[in-house]
Image (cartoon, rainbow, N blue to C red; front, side, top):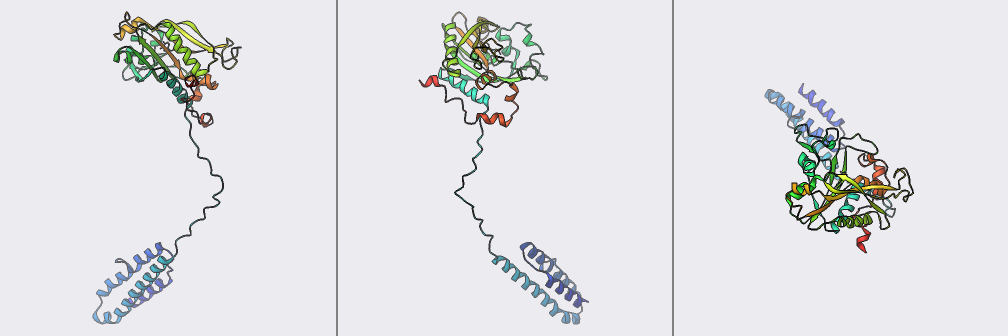
Length: 352
Ligand code: DAH
């Protein structure tokens, strides 16, 4: 019986061809491992009577050493196999594929440029929160209690805490800056603002703004005008015509809006400027004395000017973009057009 078993195992062992490491390992486990078939035979061998042991022992030992021999020679043959040949690198003189360089978002480019222009004029960059209370967004900025902007229709209030809201303009940063610092204050703030508006080519529920102010003794409207003239020249070019138009904001008195000559039609009239030849770029004015008082700054001693603009609007004019949604929809074909633009090296007016 056991002799038959040994013979069959030998036959099976001889049919196995070991050509790779995985087969070698299987062979080891099946035949010479502690739980392999030869080890099992040795277990059974222990139970045999002495006479049978004498007859079978040499055959079993022979099988074991044959298995070990086959394993060793297969293992050393596999070790000797040469490592795979190194692939030829091909024609190294061919031109390389260009690395696909990313681009800054057009809003980042415009934002960088605006910040750079005002920083060169001595304005600091102030930080403000996107979530503010009614006081920072409306109350301290002299909005009357029943002003329509305070309505749910225009403003996103937080559901968990309706006393908090998403700022509707970066003018709210004026209040945090003016309560934390004492004049002279010359600062700008840039960031995201939110309004409860339907999304279309002309409006969105979030967009970006920048706001600036200068508070000191004896600040006048002509300081505001000088600053804005300089900004327009640096942003849109020296020859750009601009005009101040009387307007109204609760937080400035007097208030104005600034238009520039339409860049598309050179002021002749087109659909972008609604055939007026002018496009509005910002709101501005002298800070209302009530706002200064709300921030514990004495309006008898100090005066200041402020201004604010939409970053998207400036970018649309600068790059002739006609749909606000392009800024947030991340189409690569749109974004790739801004490769290589940074927005802070080309404020030509300052280089003179
Ligand atoms: N906050 C205004 C808006 O969102 C823009 C603005 C106008 C800001 C006049 C100002 C300013 O600081 O003085 O439309």
